[in-house]
Length: 398
Image 1: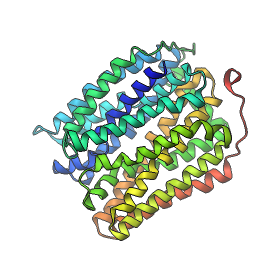
Image 2 (image 1 turned 90 degrees about the vertical axis):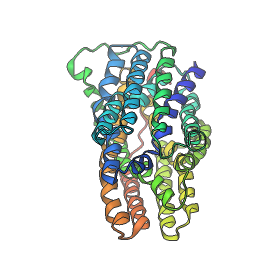
Image 3 (image 1 turned 90 degrees about the horizontal axis):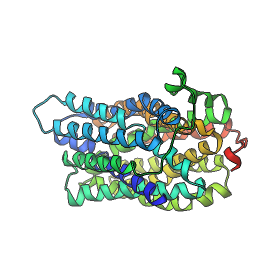
Image 4 (image 1 turned 180 degrees about the vertical axis):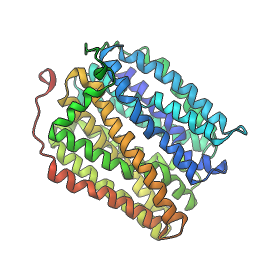
């Protein structure tokens, strides 16, 4: 079971790992400017507003989770391949944006669903989940190296094709995961639309956690959107591979998550993650001042640690506290807050800040990253003041 979950996480992580770090440079190579880059990066956030809660509710109440996951993987893979193929035709760039958006709507629940499936079957979630989730990190790393050094596709739609094929394989593989029948029994329209998940926001710590997650995800959108362009501006032409440096620290963090979750309070771990996230963008700003990529690479190296300590802690935090009938929807609500609302706002703001600083020459990359660092820093006092850390009873006596 652990091997199967690890394998699917590997394939799910590998798919976007091919094209996401390279997307800005792929579109630039096709002669598309910052407005098209913004539109491409908006596809995922908009999708995350639409489908994770609804599909999560279906898995919680109507259909076996692994079957739903398998089909959304297959369908989204076909749409993803069509999107990148459109870049090699005389068609309007809107074809690419439309097909990418359609693929994203279908694929948006994949991470949250796979998390829910894993939590259902892992006996010791806090010890075993970081191990299977490590597969996604290793898959992303492998894809980055393959994109830069094997496929030579840092500026080519080939990276998108590779992502589509990998996702297709992941979809088929999911059918062999352990059966995950729905736990909930409700057939109400409210439940089937995933609206029951919003009940979680009535509890203070949940509300604070989801709010801070949304705020943190606003500057996080800039990481994938503009770090590859900054790398290229500093002479690094293998951005996809360089971006995988962040996954090295993510591996280290995954391996110690079990110890972290048993020895430290959730609030402490989240606060450390926010502090490191601020430091990451400060290092990026220093790269803008000095013109040396070493500062940028140092910040990238912190990314995996920041991500794991915040988001994996958050996933485990939710699994501790929510009823089994809301498990997938709770993870979907996290996706909506982070990849949806936060990333949507972050993508729009990142483009505006980029145009005002880097493109217009007002402060350049240094000013751009200082603003992002400030956005992360705002999250620290919000969590420190409003999160109480009151323990909640665990499900099933765990």
